[in-house]
Length: 288
Image (tube, rainbow, N blue to C red; front, top):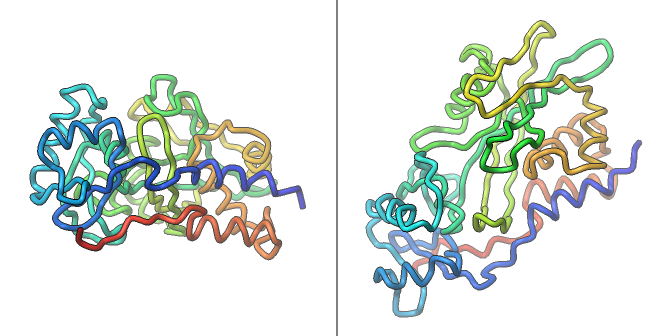
């Protein structure tokens, strides 16, 4: 068994945010939904969202989308022109409101994403399709990525988003993508230049025939490489070549495939961190 302790650094890197950490609680329709960054808190105060106890609140969720558009126009973030659902409950199928994807970190809203391991079982062992992110990507250009990964746009379930991304990123048919299995749900709390990321990743496995070859379709991936899983293991262990959150999904795969013993001390630590996160999220759903 190869040393597995270096894998813990990836979990720690994705769970380094301190809350509240100077951020202001944000309530949507009476329930705490996010943590507003210091950069835009004064602007929201100026717009009259302040409550008596100093928190920020928007009572009418239907105004959230227009609020996000105004902040983009004022230069607080670059719009993605893609709406995401916003809800205080990460497991809710009902959204309280919607806002542009680029505004989510400013408000510290939870965001849902999908990641899919594209697996090929060959005589030489298990292989993984790896995407090379385009150099023009806004986030982590040129980094290694999954065969399919993306956000869950407003109105979609994770599985619907997965099939959409599979077609757009790798030219995978709906019929083939429908065979993917949901294998994990991973969350983390990470402070990045764009703001606070409180992400929930829905992770899938899809076993593909040796004859399959993915083709980039939307320009977000430059090309794909089929790598032995052992080489992927070594890459994650020794480098930061993969996009930051991809490492977490791959560590989950390594545990499930036995490359890291789930019964070892580090295996149990990694498993616990992936299942529950290493940093508690104090965002409550109580009224203010």
